[in-house]
Length: 157
Image (cartoon, rainbow, N blue to C red):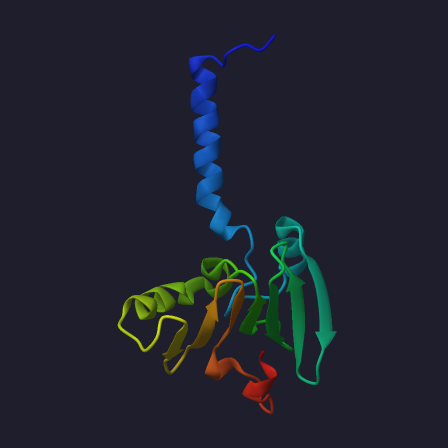
């Protein structure tokens, strides 16, 4: 037999739900411009698989999200994520992926721009290109000043 929760329990459940909602955007922290140290924990939290490869002067962490989208995080030898790229049927959580640069993206998305399927943000310290349509999204964002010497922007996809 099920019993109804007491009034005090309702407040505990509500407080727990609010705490989870508040912390949810911060659960995965390997974001653009941040340390790469939490990639494995992020993958576990997202129930995603990670494949990491070592390039000459950077590392790529490829995360296969449950949605089918592939998110790639490019990290310097010093462990800082200098670029992210995605492709797949759904956009990744861009607030989580772009971190402190998310507000720049939101402002650019609200501004008038050519076409509704393509967005380009070109600033001195942040570049983002995103395009797509239903079930086919691609994009990348990078920090020009953080791209390691000798790395071609064509490699960041």
